[in-house]
Length: 127
Image 1 (cartoon, rainbow, N blue to C red):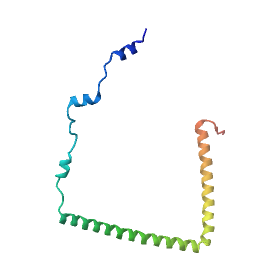
Image 2: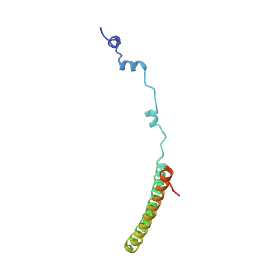
Image 3: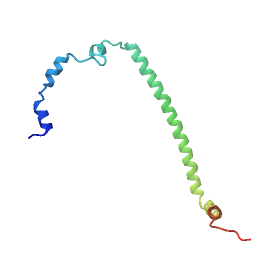
């Protein structure tokens, strides 16, 4: 005896998808047609020229802005180079500052760890 699925498939009729599509009729338009695109309003040659001129003006302003930023960048580079060339005297001061900062951070971290232990109840003060 065959399974129920096999019997169901056996009795089902085949439907031709092309015939079904033809029976439904033409497809619904879901947007503008080619004719709509061809008949759309277009700018005149003079308007196109004006738009191109506006774009050129905008690009000029951008070019001027970029030149100004490049000049500022060059000035910053020159300052940095001067610092590096005069450099060795200030490097010892920087080392001293770093040592001081490390000492401060060690103090702060020790105090913080003690506070954490106190908050957890692991650190008890005996008077």
